[in-house]
Length: 440
Length: 178
Image (cartoon, rainbow over all chains, first blue to last red; front, side):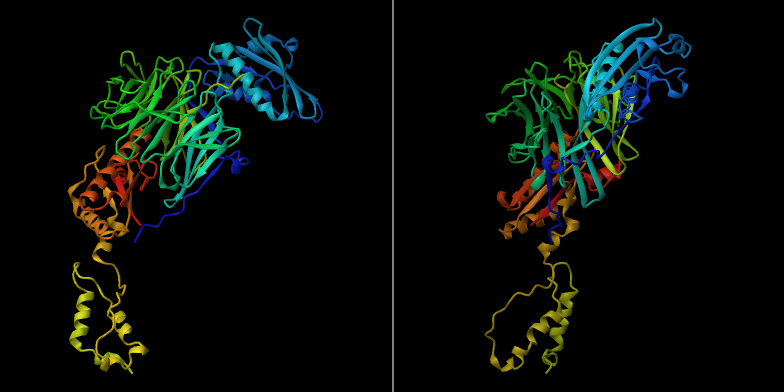
């Protein structure tokens, strides 16, 4: 008589610590900047035992910078010479290849599993050194150290802080058939490497959100056929259930100071309202009280306001309200027949939203200027959703579709650079959220 | 000894008619009935008079149970709406009556949405739909404690596809009877 129901299950980080390289993502630039910085990343010299270097620093830096959409790397077979020190460079070799910047360096063994990396970056036209550094690195950290070199070069050339040392959290769903689904919450490096499953369940996982210090991720889990919000510490895998009230417990997002979560609750009443929950004291404050669907809360950078989605005017639109009880909500979006899931840019001046224009069917990622309601459409898919700003504000990652499969993509906030992030076949990838900058 | 010969033809006919009768009749398996009364313990029972106790025999689904069968467990909705369409009124009335009559029965209403729009907004939409169905069941006499709700939004699609046909089958409330 009753429908067959498979038993729910959930596994968290403790049991999954060894599950790296799962759901590896690969980045490809689908539409780049026409004015690329022509770059040469010369293979680093190697000083140590063994004939080959244990890690190709130049190749990773090249991959990072090419993936940014601002750089193009010279193919190694076209290099006339391969200097590994500034003093060895003949700039003429690079000028005739129209190279703008040149990276040379060396990797040296410094002990058991210990290395030293030195590198120099040059402006080829002027024959001028732009960067020169040396850094120690354990063998396990060679990849992370190389990302930091990418960050330095990117910032030197663009004036914008690099995001190659940041991470992305996202949800995957594998479903060989309708009765057998596996949902995973994954944390990976920004280039898709080192993907680690931090939670796995047969019931949906959704809405991951980073704490401002990057140590915790809050998310929604439906284990036991009941929505609940959890907060999980990445380093230990320990998780805490922060809200399991009657009905919907959804859309968690940390306040800028990390002390509170803004959440959406139905409290068994059938309609969602925005609440704030002080994590340490479990103090719950109701912010909106309306018969409409109020959800997708997002804090302003100063923590004084909450942006949210509401259908109180008939269709979903973006509003904001002071983050205190009984605040007066103000409508923020006016253009288009559906605007939702606002995310605030790092400088606080823009919102990334899901936007459906007048007379249009497609959901696209757009920028909304909350001061004047102006909308600038960025993406070109038909079911684009879940925008999340990179912490440097230059990129937005979002979820889109490729031949029926959920995939991730990024777009630069000027709309110029589009990237598709390929995911393993057979798994939907969605709800990407970019981490804050790592603490230095 | 075979007891079949002592059952009048008219009784067999009545049983057969009941078995293939209309939707309002509780179907009875004639063989099940015969087997019950022809067991070895009753083999000399004719002269004993009638002092036995009627024991209900499970012979297949009842009207209420049929209303709760899998194909009747889903209510579908229009895009971005949560009003119950008239064609689901009779089915929900049967569910409500069943819950009112069987105090131990419970149902979980699982609200769903199609994939368009924000995921958390769709959680709100699924919740609103589940609550709309709950209201109907309560009006039919179900007790609040018998009816729980959960919204899965667009997270548990029944059909995978990005077209109106798939969307219309995903905008739904599933009634999970226990």
